[in-house]
Amino acid sequence: MSKYVKSSKNTIFQIEDTENYDQLIDEEIVKIKEVLQRHPMRIPQYYYQLIDWDNEDDPIKKMAIPQIAELNVEGDYDTSGEASNTKLPGLQHKYQRTVLVLSTNTCFMYCRHCFRKRMVGYSKDEIMKRMNKTIDYVKNHKEVNNVLITGGDAFTLTNKTIEKYLYHLTDIDHLDFIRFGTRSLVVKPDRIYKDQKLLDILNQYHIKKEIIIVTQFNHPNEITKDTLKATLALKKAGCTIRNQAVLLKGINDDPDTLAKLFNKLTSIGIHPYYVFQCRPVKGASHFRLPIKQGIDIINQARLQLNGLSKAFRYIMSHPRGKIEIIDKTDKQFIFKFHQHKYDDDSNLLFMKDIDDHSSWLDLDLNPIKS
Ligand code: SF4
Image (cartoon, rainbow, N blue to C red; front, side, top):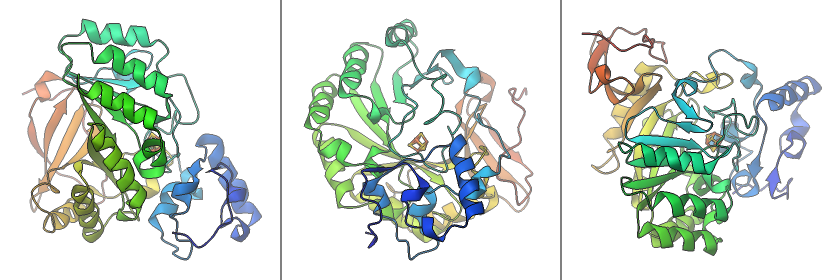
């Protein structure tokens, strides 16, 4: 916990309320305010208190506090082709079995590495407007067996809205499970353990369908006593919890940190699921790592993990699908499609020459024809 108490606000929205404000020169303040025009700031007090201000490289600080480096807008805002998978406002259908719902553009914290910077805390254009149309779409697509309600952060929705989703979706026979994408477990765990109404709703509907909470812990310092309270509460309510970490430069780009994170998560019943290669999103280039380095870090971390804690896949979320980064030889990198947008890519294993410094895979947007 931080020994600093500069801000006593429940949520911090302004750079003026942060501990390092007094050390910033005018020019830096102007630049950070420019960043905030594009990607706003929002930090729950709970997460803010995890920052160690004495540590210049504190990982929590880097994920929460805006940085001037975000003004670098090299890259794209939609790196995995979400616009082209949108079938209705706020509803994406890229993989045959999964429908993804952008239910809100609000999050408890606006993470500085977010890949949906184009919309979170900013634009409501892409979020779901009519729940009935979404439910009808899922009902009419019998090939779909799961729905991911995300955003933004799905647990910023009211309990009433969460219940409405569950009421309708748990009644659809061809669905096997429903997922909620939320970082509340990481940045605001009391949203879960203090809200008995939310827990009662989850408990009521998990009997009809499996409910999976998908979250994003990126560093072991994010796991606290409050995490444990929220995790136990979710498990008691019948939910399963899965973690999707993002490989981030300066946060978790060393094997010991990753191994500690995955072992700790597994020990409290949060199962590592994916490790995502950081996407080439505008404003997050300072978090990106070369694929070559990523493979080395993951391989070395795996040596410290058991079967469960290393059951995750190292994934690049590409417009053509989720591409697993498997390994490298002396000359080439090995990839395999884990999820495909086009049938021709199904299970496709391929090798590519890649520059040692490349952090993304330059593939055609169309499927490979054999
Ligand atoms: S909680 Fe998720 S969607 Fe929201 S800012 Fe963080 S990474 Fe982005």
